[in-house]
Image (cartoon, rainbow, N blue to C red; front, side):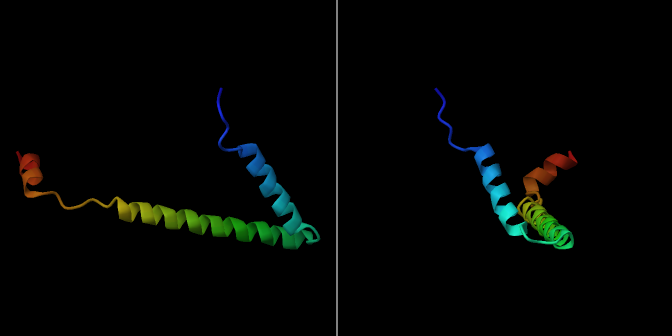
Length: 72
């Protein structure tokens, strides 16, 4: 029998409840701004993660032995 270690649906529902509480009482314009700001923040975080990944995986100069094999 599998033991469930992570409840994706439960996490989603908790997030929806939290967001619903945050936007309750907001005007339509305020709600749009709320979600727009969240989307912009998300895009910034994705871009930063991509840049971190690229920096971590930059090619290092090939060793002399590797260069000699390539030129053969």
